Image (cartoon, rainbow, N blue to C red; front, side, top):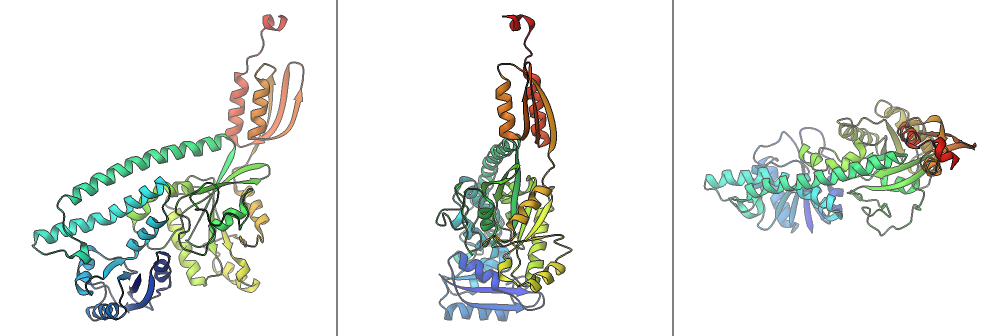
Length: 435
């Protein structure tokens, strides 16, 4: 699919590298670009002359789509659709992202989130078509599409239905997270800008996957996390186990962030981001090989998304140090110190400094407490001892005639459960003891 990319900025030089990457990730072949530095034109986004130039380029290049890096309002979409050659579709950055999400969505949850985002994007455009229809203006097929009087009502009903289903899925996932915590697991989430290397880092941290293993499997499957140099490789979440002695840790890879996303799009993927918001620790992964200005901008985007609701500590991981020398790494660390204090620099691909990262994870996670429990000797005592072995780090077990002393370290929640289980053990009565 041949496409022209377009971008307008208020001042400075427009950079089309990211929108080009996004277009290519969606399967487009970018055959040209049009850029402009000026205030937004309310009718066309670009100035009229530049918009005409865009139409000419699209015709000459035989493009089927024009992709704007700017957010297009409904009327701008309509006006550009009228100006472009017949058969040329105009979409903006967010429509493009939704296309990519739609291509990558494999789980029911991911598919619902994409559908919800698409409906939220479509709703104001349907409302605009309604307004145009009332003024007897034809909305135009390649602009806003044909007008359907019942569509607005249908969209609102679909949005309500999808939100209800996603709420049920999130409730199930929240229960799963609680069960994992109750079983002694610490929850770590990988966050970061798209293509920072989160999936590769997950593979490096996990105890049961090699970095180059199962490359052809989809990242949404529980058996793997795909690693590719491609935007939005991970759309859903993938959770793997990492042993950080004596802890049992679950690490979850999530969808990558991207700049300038509207609230409705972030909100549509709220339940996926809950894996980050409700973790015990967040690893914010950054591609340190990129130019410092890009890293800074992407860190700001990540912080804007994380600090809205996140309460867990955040450790910045400077990934891909195999692509920079020591001097460049030191300069970037200094330049980013305000946004990324005390980062850990690693190469997820090569494994450099991963041991240091594991030590940092152990340090940042909630502290374990030490407990000594005296369990009365009953028929159920050994099952409690076994449960403590499964969910804590047992230092010593001493067996006496009438009781068992267990010394162990664990999360406070596990200690509370162990105490509860111990209190439920019935002390043998004199009658039963004499039988």
